[in-house]
Image 1: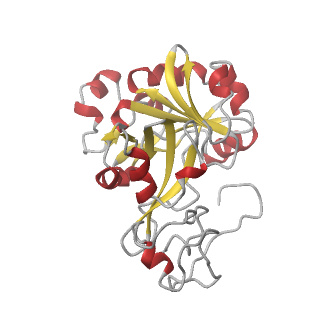
Image 2 (image 1 turned 30 degrees about the vertical axis):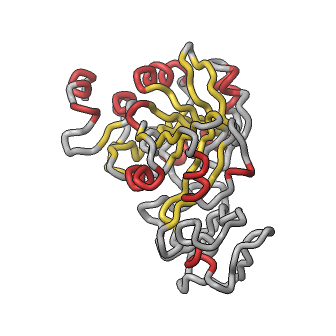
Image 3 (image 1 turned 60 degrees about the vertical axis):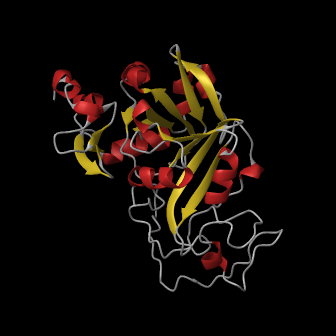
Length: 303
C-alpha cells in the first residue's frame, strides 16, 4: 500500500472501516501481516517470525505500536474526584507525575477493563483503556477522546533505555511508573515508565504528525517491531463476572470508601465484606463461582 492511497483515506480508516495506526505505512513497509483487532487494523506478525521478535524483547529491545489503546483526556478541578470515584485503585497513593494501574467495573462488580492512568499535571489526566472500551470509558468519566491525536510507542526490553538514550536521554531517564513531558527529536512527548511485557522500558505518546519520523529515526536495523501480546486478559475477553477481588489481575480495590460510592462496590464485597482502613477482606474462595485456568510455560518463550 502506497503512502498516497493511505493519506487519501478519511480520518485514517481502512476500506473495511477499521481504524489505522499513525504508523500503518511503516508496518506495511516492514512486511507486517495486518489483521482486525478491537476495531483497528494492526500488525499480527512480521517476516522475522514471532520467536525472533520475542527474543529481541527479552534480550535486547523491541518497539510495540500500541496506538490502538485509547487515550481519554480528563482535566479540570473535578478530574481527580471523577477518577477516584469510577476506578478501583486509590489515586491518593500517587501524585502528579505518576502513573497508576487500575480497573473499571460494571454495576455487578465485574471487571470491564484494566486501565493505566497517567497523571500529567495537577488537574490533567490521560486515562488509557483498551481499544474497544475507549468510548465506554469516556462516557463514564467524561473528558475528550484524544486517541487520534497521538501514537504510542512502547519501547521495551533490557536494553530499551540504552537504545532510547541515543535519541532522547530525557525519555530514557523516566523511571518506572513516572510520567514526564520530555523532548524526543525536538518534539514534546509524554513519556511513562510503563508497559506490559515484564521487561524494563517506557511508553511514549508522540503527537500524530511526528510519529512516523520518531519511529523511523531511532529504530536500528537489528531492533525489532514486536507484536503486542497482552498477557493479562484485555477487555474484549475479560469475563465481566470476574469481580475485582476474584480476578487474577493485580489491582484489587485499594481505598477505604463507603459502600456504594464506587461502581460495583456492593457486588464486589457484599454486606459481609465491607471496606476498612486496611482494605477489603478477601478469602481464597472464588466468589464469582467459576473456575479459571491458565498456562505455565517451562521456558521463556511465547505461551
